[in-house]
Image 1: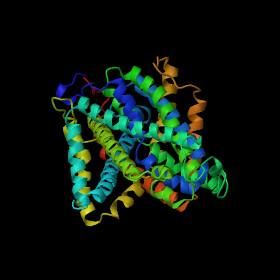
Image 2: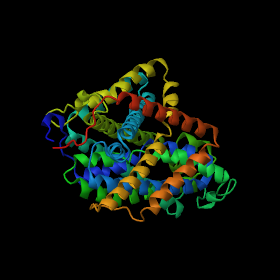
Image 3: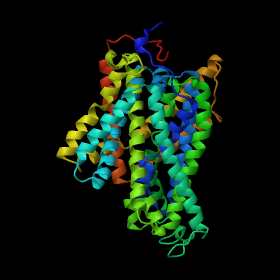
Image 4: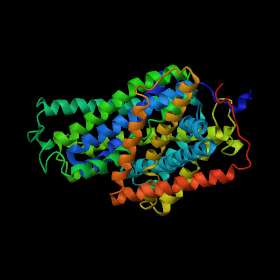
Length: 460
């Protein structure tokens, strides 16, 4: 059915920008900061945790590529779940993802502000949160082309920092760059062995690692606003996933090889701890600057992702239709402003309770990525079987179907089962399960008298 152009997005992203968004979305605070917590739990065996989680995300992204190539949509996995399992499933997944991103955006602004406030103590932390939220909201209101440029250069800086760090690690571990004390691969087996926490330590670290991989899904959303959705998503998944795995595994290997896994500095800042072996003044400040850029980049991408998800929910009458209004630049402005509203509230929360609020909120959404990946795997399994039964042509096809899809679900179920044995992880999982159940029930009730939207067009 035809739509007025004031409710359609504009195709303005290039394949290069989407590729860098995929890299930038995954290389965030989860790697630069969160990896320290994972290392402290699993020791050097955290490499296994990263390899396991990395393999799962590669398969999940391949599933998304198959579905996006066949039906590009700004609602991405929410739209696909809608088609596969009905609108209650699509609504639940869309709203769950939106809530996750809304909270994470506020947390990222808070994290960046906490670091910058130490450099400029005359400006309170809440003032920096306000500045970052206003600036990146403005960037997202300028149009998708300008957003793509912002995110592209954010990602370039992060990727460059990782490459420099990997080169530094190779030079130190090969003894080309001298250090005060000899550094080799001995730390991988010292201090309690390669896996001091055993299998439980590896499993406990997986949940942290999976959260750090969150953000790559934005490429599935962004593909709908590119000039060649099917071709772009295919190329992006092939290139980005391999690079992410290399960057993550390479960085973590350098850290655990250079610094003993139980060194307290690992928790404070794993990258800075590894660089400290050079005794170069200002290294910690440089790494903190990179972390701020990583947080702002992820925040920028998450404002984009949350606004497009909300826009898609509105197009399918799963959210107020007002959020579907698009400006002349192709920006769903009301969806953007709705998605950052909580971040403006976070300014006040940072003023009143700067240290308590965000950890509580992050605990609620900490394992939502597990639910989202599970939904994606189930959706792909249903839609692929349906397409094969109907003889439909798919531009991209997941290899090893259906065995790889089923294996992914088994692995995710195993991660949940093992994580339930850890108190902190169990709390996160139960809170996320409760949130998902509430959204499902509310969606069921709210949609009883709302007519189904069968076809809709989002991009002009």
